[in-house]
Amino acid sequence: MFTATITLADQAANPYYYVPFEVPAGTTRIDVVMDYPKAENCVIDLGAFDPRVTDYPSQQGFRGWSGGARDRFFIALDDATPGYVHGEIPPGRWQVVLGLYKIPARGATVTLTVSLDNAPRALAPQPVRTHPVRKGAGWYRGDLHCHTWHSDAKGSPELLHAAAKQAGLDFLAVADHNTITQRRYFHPHSSPDLVFVRGMEVTTAEGHANVFGVDDWIDFRMTRPTDAHTLARLVHERGGLLSINHDKPPIPWSYELPAIDCMEVWQANWFNWNWVSLETYQQRLASGLRISAIGSSDYHQPDRLLPEGPFVLARPTTVLWLPELSEDAVLAAMKAGRGYVTESPTGPHLAVTIAGHPMGSAVPGRTVTAEAEVNGAAGDRLVWIDATGVVGEETIEGDFRKAEFTGTPSRFLRAEIIAEASRPRLMAEFAAALGEKPLPWGISQADLETRPLRRALANPIYIDD
Image (cartoon, rainbow, N blue to C red):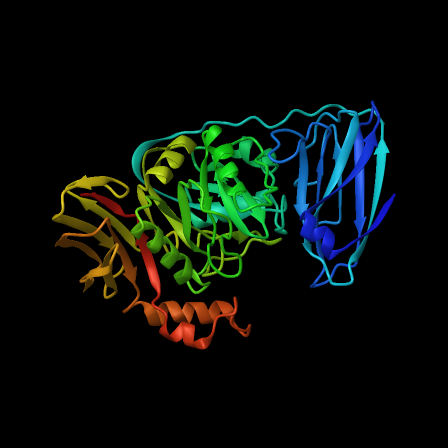
């Protein structure tokens, strides 16, 4: 048993507090229980490393993370608590890692109880990635950020899988916080009907980022603003993509901006402060950066399957043009910006081209003629935007429309659909789903009444002067 009082000085020195313990040879199961006075102002995260771990950035030794969602875990040869890695238990100096998320002024007394067992157990293998493919080029729909009980959601992978099928999705990235153990379910269940994209959400008090297309655990223990560049290097060395998540209240990105591939410009319902992240994205594009826009629900699967509505999985949906449906094709299209974000799996279609060049392309010249193919947004407003702001807009006539813009855009050209005719219906659906609950996310009634309501956002086409 270990007991210590953790103080604000400990938190200031290092947001991660390590408690070592010895594991003898022959151990087949480890159980850890944490006890502390959990409260609104006292939240301590929980995780574990085996003897192979090094100082940041480590490439080995990760054995699990549950954040503040759990106060106990086990790791065995054949099984482990969700969020923790089962398998071989090397003897030596293990460590419980405590994430000092919130510590009250008086400090917090933490007690850890570690139990070891050497009963015979069979060694279970790690899951093997599968490579399903659905042939055929076209538009494919998915959600790139959601959670299961492998981190802080209450629902199982099976329930999230059912929610994705209910939504009619083609691909799904499950990005549990600081862990990759959701792959125990999603690797063997990836199929041509629903392709699962490998994901992990790097979660810290100073910002969140998604890692896509990497099977390895990526060290999340960033403590300095410059560590973001180390994060990008770790991801790109493994052939993955890095995306900044929900860069808006309450958890904006506070690190230095590293070399990112994507940015989550729309997370959850539009009124969840997404105008802030979209404006940040616009500023980054205007500065000359070329970053693909994606959207995701950040859905935390509950312990039951909910009906479709404004606050469930795939709100919003990322729609990508793929030569085939596969994880490799999804990742390539994300990096290239070959798609758009729309409010739901049945939301408006918005595809922009310039002289046949798709979204994410770079085209030469100054004067260009762009075409937007729009469907499902009759009576709404189509807006054209470059580095200086809005450069054109029109009301969308009819359910299907091909609109054109001719001009000399600065740096890039992108398009948005803003609700006009559809706004009363969408606001009524929002109110009905909210019921008697107060307005969420700290927004005001004035926000609901005055903020433009985006229905779809197209990736930019870049202008090479």
